[in-house]
Image (cartoon, rainbow, N blue to C red):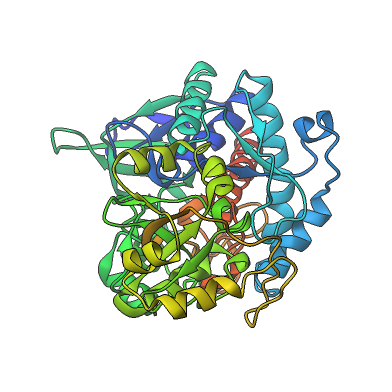
Length: 451
């Protein structure tokens, strides 16, 4: 590296939820760190999400008397992935995310726990959110906290080069400044908290063919940089077939619609007036189900009580303001809206009586009542869940299984805890990996620097 290169104990590539959480953990240990962020305002995939962080045994859960445990949460993650999730990361992130939530709350961020419903696969109320219930609000809180604790964030700085010596020890990075010139910074530890590859069309087509023509609802900065660096370093990759899809991408408005609508009685109906899957299994695998329907679209159909719930989510409120919601007084009007046969649609609705378990395995609590409400949706890719293989301390692994000396990764840059398939994604796994993984990576970096 250039001889006059400044030195920082820890450099973090990416100031999303993962990078900021790592920075908070490092500053808790009084270690200086620099976050290099490609955008003018830190946001990433988290800012586009609902901002719900799953965590068990937090102070807030105990305060509300919620019966939950890290072991129960871990069981839910493993069950959803059919046992494919990396057990060592599941255990590491269970502990990491709880430590992160409790610390960030202690530092002044106010959290709530979602009430009134459970996301698919969760057996306890464990979704922690800021009062605004948006990913953008969560990001703003994390950035304020990290900066207040003394972390340095350098925006519009795109990392282009990783510098390592002959023993695979990271020396530092080179990054493009806003004016296009290259700048360099040396470090004792490097944390890759940057991105997945959902925004790289060529990689998606190669690794996730089912999503090749799907809408990408994630952050454009997810260009696969971490994987490219890993390949150049001959690092091990894992779970590259894992991703978070979403079967409720509002079209043409372009926004995620909360899956709480499905959990509380809503259904998805295709252009033929038929349901086509068990909506209670999860929104990730619903993406491929919706894309397989005529025109690759479906209608989210629900009634007044569910609409009231949907309107508690700011992202949905904005979509409704943009014209996403349609209302039908009766089955005839709903069939006209969908463009399907009335008798077929009536038969579909008749099969949703209270207590009935349908052919897809869903048991209904009640029937939908007119008037009906509908939102047109398609399937989308939100973010990927595979990447650099890492150990329980978030150290990047070589192909022989040994760790690089001082190269760490978490969040979108690394493998997650969703296994290798779309159906392995448990609601909140993205932020579990980002916040839990970011906390673990920060702790590992602190130990290496202090040691």
